[in-house]
Image (cartoon, rainbow, N blue to C red; front, side):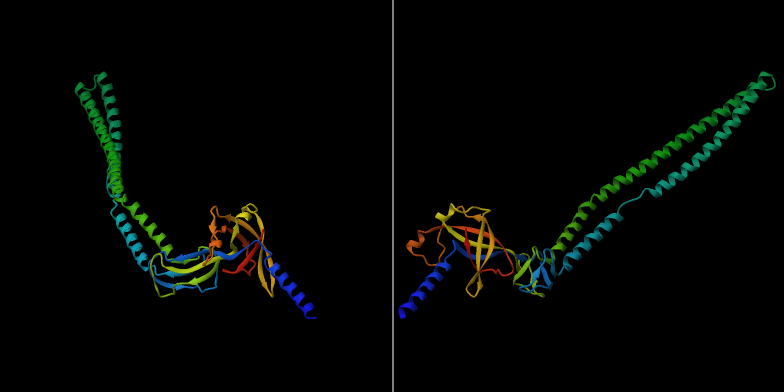
Length: 323
């Protein structure tokens, strides 16, 4: 009877041992971890993260005191305002010149009217001279009067042209002066843009969607550029890192679909699809802390497999692979 009991027990243990090794490789699950560090110096005013919290990509979770940068930005804006006040305007000078132009045009209008009258008078005297009703001296005086008025009109028109040229010159001179002053404005405005970019660094955001693994800082602490604040990892796609032997190397390739087995409790396993996305090009010794001479002779190749997380996969969890 004892023999009959021992035999099934031995077969069961042997079967369990075989089923427990029904895989080609094994390893542990990893995730793409991102260390979020401070991008600015200052006191952390807010930090709304806790370990295990799920974050969205670009989600704002905290703020580093931006007062110092804001004050520098305000100072530069005031400098821009001072630069603009240094600019000149040709309007007052132009208004004076335009007033003179208006007067000159009115003068020309009067002279033209006088010229018409003088020409009519000269023509009248010329006719009288022909009729011996006026003297030649009267005609010479009339011609002289016409010439005088024509010269006055020419001088007035020259003065009008000069005034117009002075307006153009005034505008050009002021424009040159303003360009020299405003040449300082563009680089100063760029400094405002730089401060705007710096202010973005005062905002603490999650660069990826994922879970907060570790929190290193708290609100009220002083942050310096590069100081770790928290660590986040994307758990949607997990990475199973495993090792394959040299004789298995010919059977696997990147992009290959494989079966990943994980413990589902009560001695059962759960199967998940996976994809090999990386195989090391260099062999290494079996990665064990303590190695015998024979174990060091076993060369293996590291491989990484992407596995879509169904919610049960955790970092550090073991998994087996069937090629």
